[in-house]
Length: 122
Picture (cartoon, rainbow, N blue to C red):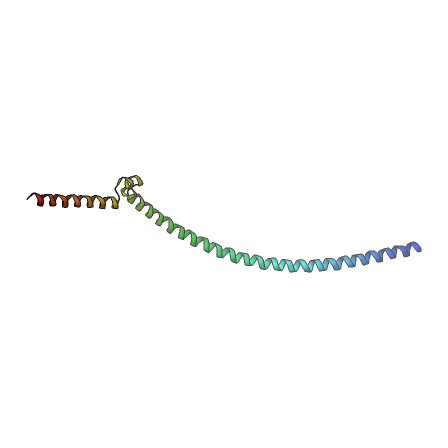
């Protein structure tokens, strides 16, 4: 009889443990349901963001096409203009404005002296 009562006590303990485990599992399932609902909400938000990004990428591609056309035109203009521009060496070979004004002053002074000399000789 003690054997039977011991087996019943063990069974009752096992049943109690199973009830506790079932309660824990119910709690875990409830938490998982909440998490799944949150994930579904996040996924739908991400889908919205992805569709917005697709539109933005399409706009950027269109804009880049325009930019490429503009850069191509600028390149053509530069290639047409650059050969006619002076190089740094060309600019260095030309006399400065101050130097040219000095030469002009010297020539005018020499011309004035020549006129004065002619006036004295007459």
